[in-house]
Length: 154
Image 1 (tube, rainbow, N blue to C red):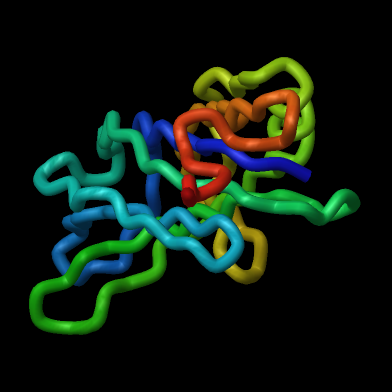
Image 2 (cartoon, rainbow, N blue to C red):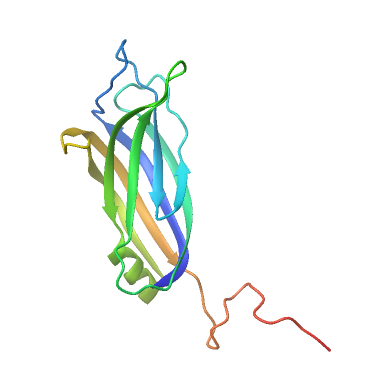
């Protein structure tokens, strides 16, 4: 399908449901695209309405044509003395974003709210995320700009 750079802009979340005994949560997000994972910073002292305002980057290199491209965002609560708690997840379909980006060179999903749900699909808040895909530039002969296509030999 294409090669390029996928940038995921984590903006904030609202109304996250927490599980801590004292009601305080320290959320972070694990963003997964296929086998790649990136982890956001942990937000402290903002409770159920955290702001990240950070960008996580993924290198895309896919030759499959009829494949669904999805981002999975797992929202977790950092705990110091026990394992981290799963707060919920959101899924963003980016198949069209990548297709348009390959055609036009760049494509963007402006920041929007996505429902955070648990395994039983119950609502646990919303996360605001923007996504940009920038296609890798390819020369007419198929070589990628900025990289070495062939080694020089005498």
